[in-house]
Amino acid sequence: MLLATAFLPLHDVPAAVELLGRDATGSVAALFNYFRAEWMPPDRLPLWNVYNINIRTNNDL
Image (cartoon, rainbow, N blue to C red; front, top):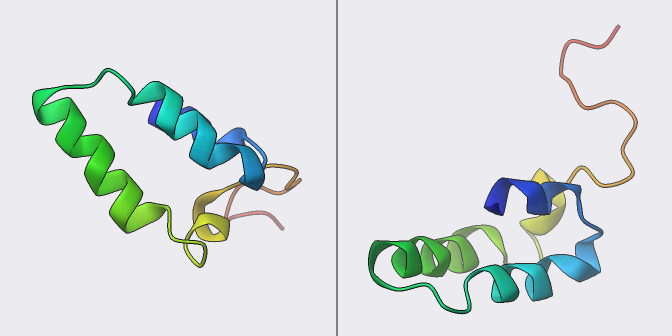
């Protein structure tokens, strides 16, 4: 489900990740903590978010 957050508007991603990880425990909770720390800082979100981008591949001619 974390992969699906790439298709959400940027302003909805933090709430979606919080909702998905709300009841997580153990290694799944650790995954959500890692994701928040490494991939959700404001400068990183636009790097992996593809919401409203027409070209989603690096081999487009």
